[in-house]
Image (cartoon, rainbow, N blue to C red; front, side, top):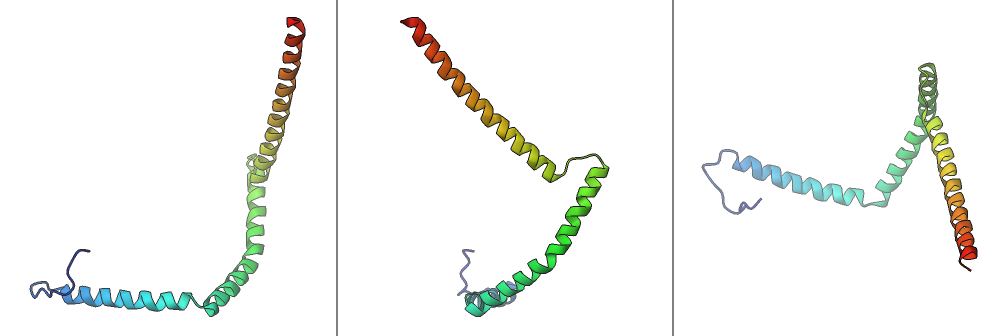
Length: 116
């Protein structure tokens, strides 16, 4: 890290190999940096990802279906069941908040009527 690359230590048997490795890594990093910054690379990567996503969709659907069946056989909820339950609980929470706000309004009007 803080080594001086200019000085050569003749007593270090791996010094030459370390310097060759560092030079090689720097060269590869520069070359790969230039390669991935091109439009051709971006376009080819996009096409490859599209192809992979298209081919993985049927497999994912099959896995989802088999997992749902396995969970149903084990009498366990699926992720869809949990999502539906979370939506229902959120709806109940919102209704309770609305009722609480209405009750606060009613109580404040009731206490205003009594103070007069």
